[in-house]
Image 1 (spheres, rainbow, N blue to C red):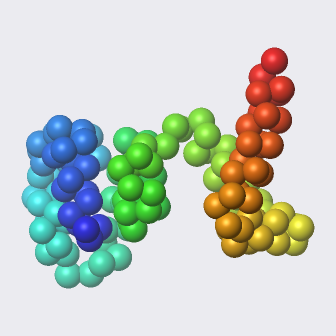
Image 2 (tube, rainbow, N blue to C red; image 1 turned 90 degrees about the vertical axis):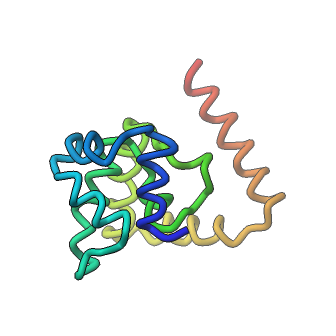
Length: 131
């Protein structure tokens, strides 16, 4: 599924909105939404502000919207986690924190069993924090 198809799918099947109501929520006309959904925009960069706005307004994962990453289970992102995560991810990506960058890359290359061990450990740490 392409980006424009995911936008239409999101609007119709997930949010159950018309092009008009979806556009109003985003501050654009129904025609703009129609042009995006039918991939009629002459310049792809015209979609960028709308993509960002859709993600912000409806708490949609930008990775899912752009690439379909994670499937339907990962369409929505809780706002509080996304904001905090984005802030820390930006800090790591622009900073000189090579340790975290290497750790994230190493984690990404692990086999599923090793990832589960780390995930279980992290979950136990988070549970202790909540107590």
